[in-house]
Length: 102
Image (cartoon, rainbow, N blue to C red):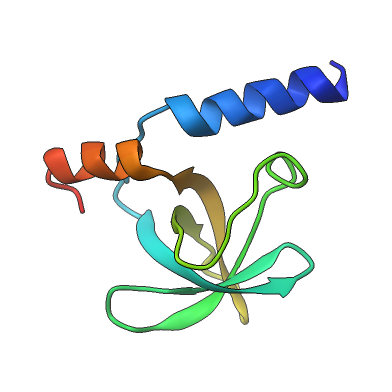
C-alpha cells in the first residue's frame, strides 16, 4: 500500500467512524504535546498523565491542545499510562453525547 493510500484510509477511519467507549476505555482532553509522539492528557477528575500515539496515526493525523481523544489504558505503564485509540471530532462527540456515554 502506498503512503498516499494508507494516509487516505487512516484519515477516513478517523473522520467517518463513530465509536463508543468500551468498558476500559476513557475520553480525555489533550493539554500538551510532549514530543516523541507523546501527549499529556487530563481526565475529567483532573488527573494528568502521558499517552502515546500509535504508529498508524503518526504523520497522518494531527492533534492539538483542547482536542478530545479516546484512549486504552496501559496498566504496566509508569509514565505513559495509555494509548490513543481514536481522535474525537465534533460529530463523534455529538454522537457519544446522544448515546449517553460522555
